Image (cartoon, rainbow, N blue to C red; front, side, top):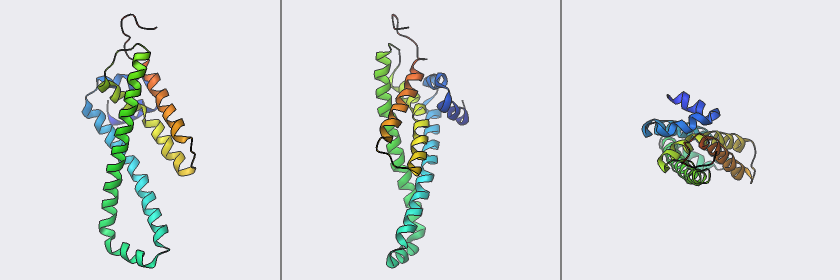
Length: 169
């Protein structure tokens, strides 16, 4: 599967989300890092916009920013990318553990490494929705709803995992 097919599978194909468990980890990592890069770009634009609005009020701060601008923006982008990567990997890992509990509950066979690959695709749509809604409005219930949506995607994908002998139908 190429990266575009992985994106399509993460959006609307739970059966293929389950099938990525047998893909090489390098392919999944490329998808995850490209997705994180795409998440970092709106955050960086928001950072620049916020910096411009803050710097308009403080004259001395504006002069300081102009002097170090060549250093500030690349470092800010790198820091945003690193922090987004850390956050996204933690999120995928937590949902993989939740997926392991769902595997046991649904009496399906699978390992953590396979569930991590599936979870990396299952969190894609909820993350996109979270970013989009985050630009429009702030809602204290949004993280819970996004988490439930990610668990729903995991549940749909786990239904295509192989059953344990004597497992539920």
